[in-house]
Length: 310
Image (cartoon, rainbow, N blue to C red; front, side):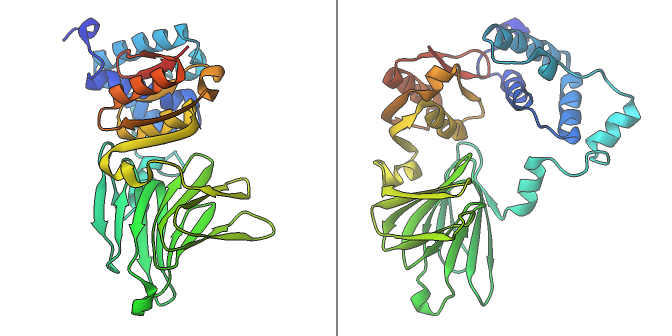
């Protein structure tokens, strides 16, 4: 198939776009760079599509040519060493996540599961958790994304139920609640009963007991702020996303969990615009169109991408 006829849903274009996003952010390990090199060289269409999208991104002013240009190929032996992680000093983040997680929801999937203690967890798209239980407590570590918990009460003789992220702990006091791990903060929203939220990086230690209809945001930097839970509530478990006066950048990041295509907002002014909307994440392109309409931005759909811009 000719590259010129590749559509926005073509898997090669989608994969090329994902590599552009990851490499544009920087910080890839040697193993990840080697994986890119191998993908780039695996088929002429890969290289052609990547270069075409790179030129498009450069025209939009979103990429650094030196950062995104494929590296000069090393010897076959060195490439194999890198691909095997022998020179990388460790595994890539995706491999590490799969090693740590007990349950992972794929992109576009809402996963409902029963934990070992009988509690229910609903994982949002592109989310992951690990679960362990001992005599002291039942512990869920939210590794990525968002999850809703319906907890089997400790009144049944079970130990406390705690959800952990790097920034916060949320201890159920017989309840139904959700925890979301964002880029630089943890959000907790309570729908039934109460949850005790602790800010782990705060000095001095800070905690807050939330009741039904309340929420809290714990920043990685060490702050805890309580508020009323926003509209939409548990609607994401049915594929609907609600945004209440959030930045376009945050809305795009949340929508991006539901599609393999990167959802990007071009320009600082566009990223900082605020919007309120409810969208159907099961149709990401239509959802992005609604976000664009609600914020006065334009929607573009180049191959493998969803772009919002002025």
